[in-house]
Image 1 (cartoon, rainbow, N blue to C red):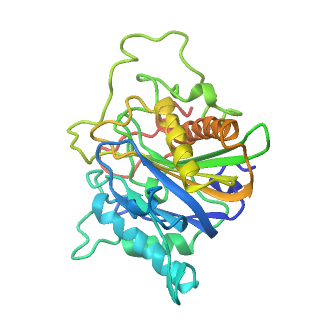
Image 2 (image 1 turned 180 degrees about the vertical axis):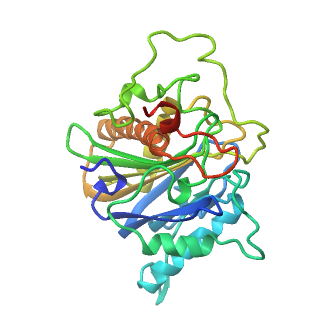
Length: 330
């Protein structure tokens, strides 16, 4: 176990980004189609193929997931991932027509200081293709891919990942793009809200403060917000065998991890989205087993959020928010 989403066999992750743009794309590629569902909790989401993932709809399996900056412009990243998959002959075969199935979601990073004057067409389709082509089992955390331009209320955001196993050996892992409206740390200190779930000092081992003051519990959010200026995106993958309905339930339970790691969360200005996918290697009990899997998945999501901020580096732009390592790393 490398504490990454790719600890699940058959999953690869690729990044593509542009420092001048201060934005990027992350592609999650499945070596074979997987059952998937989605749960949306934020008030301002931006998604691709979201209706397809509804449990009432026909297609059950997907080939990849595209996560992107760029707000609505970033939805084109899915087309780039789709193009790469088509070149590999991957996709849903409909009487000889092969259609790669690539849901996706975006976060708002248009006002982070990067150069967004890209001309007629946004660069996200090309970035999506490059991210898919770069997919591998080992990938960067922090300021990379879709996490390059992300911010939280008080610190640089980033991309994080974590993994774990249930008591019965079923694996579950998460990848999260942290661009939260709220804060991932307590007050103005180094402590992560997700501290109780930390494993082996993976995000600094600072624990929680001995006492909580009223100032620590004050709401800290990004300034001058609109409905679309934030969003945290997550992908949870397990090697359990799940139906589409069970994957939906897993996504719903795993969303609890957002609340364990971000304060406040799921706001009208957030677009928080979580995808859940299952590779189908291990059968589980549909009630107790799924409950346990969701519990562990929520912990993994919380850890991935904290790891994303802990690993981030500040943007090399005037007035950029500091990274956690800039303020507390020493």
